[in-house]
Length: 87
Image 1 (cartoon, rainbow, N blue to C red):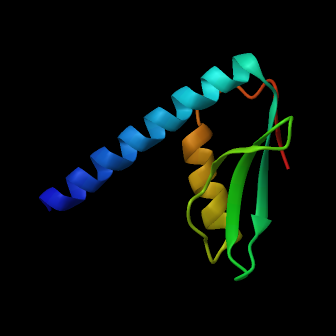
Image 2: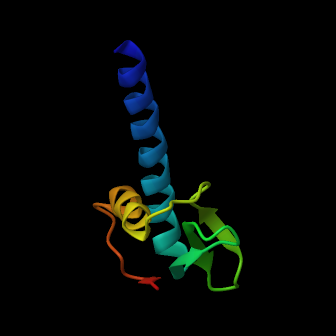
Image 3: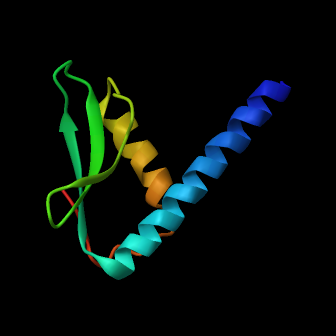
């Protein structure tokens, strides 16, 4: 069970880092979060800056769109969304 705790701790650190980066980007540039299907038919998300560059992505595909949306919601929970457009 210790491994589960370590995995949860790692996941929490990654989400915390990502949320901090989103907050920093929010103050500097508007961005758009896109949810899309990849070439394998899996669902992914990406954060695009106004210049079209991808500044963050899901890193893995999800078979169910709702799973993709759920993890994205966990990541951005607590982040104000001014300057962001979720597509």
